[in-house]
Length: 342
Image (tube, rainbow, N blue to C red; front, side, top):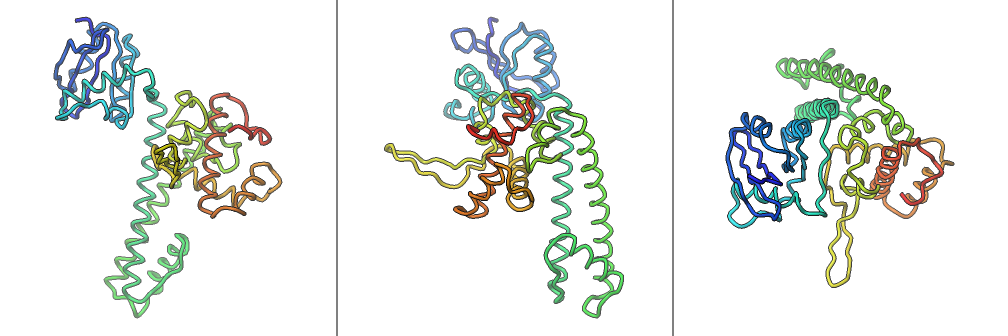
């Protein structure tokens, strides 16, 4: 077999393979149990191994690098146009192999084990924060049905919940007080777990040079710095800062026809978690940074005068993402006065 490009459609138990020769013709098709895939790749002569960037793809990609193959990971969104009619696993593998040969295709960088560990830490934190929000909303609903309204804010709710369970009230039955007491205990445990992860993230951010440089950018703290490095590494997959901002979904969607371009809301493509963090960080620059004489704060103040505060927050997040790309790729410290061209 003269396989130059091997497309793999990864499945949980079965993987479909399609091999292309140098001319792009299909010369090989096969289905393998997933646990036998690495043995097959180990015996295969060096070639391009193409996969969609999905669960387990980075592990297989690192194995390919160790065995002389050239792994190419792609977003499933970019592979979809190459799937011919009557979609099935075999055609998916063929489409993956064909998409990997396109000169304009954007590939996903192989993540290291350290990046995946850090990303898993953020995923665990995000799940705990979601559980905490869900628990607080449920408690507010229980109390609202009994005519008890608590002010906004997580800390306000927690203090009032502790007070209600300790003192009690005629509006709450004994059963409800017991339930609220359990919710308060559960909330305390979740807060402790989130605080422990936050402390670990801060320690990790202090030990990495790239993260330390990122944290010099206004609005970027340990959470954003570690999450960005875990997702994009050195940022070499992006040719310029605007590409990173577009990948984060911080740029307007375009609908262009007949030479007329129409810009609507932000695309919201890419990493939803990172986009949320950058926007939260942008709000701190807009409202909480005390020194308003710096160039970036002055730019933000001028923006707030002519745009809605939410639009200004997204624009600020876009600016932060471009600066972060420059800091990562050039391996230079943040320079407040060098903001032009980002």
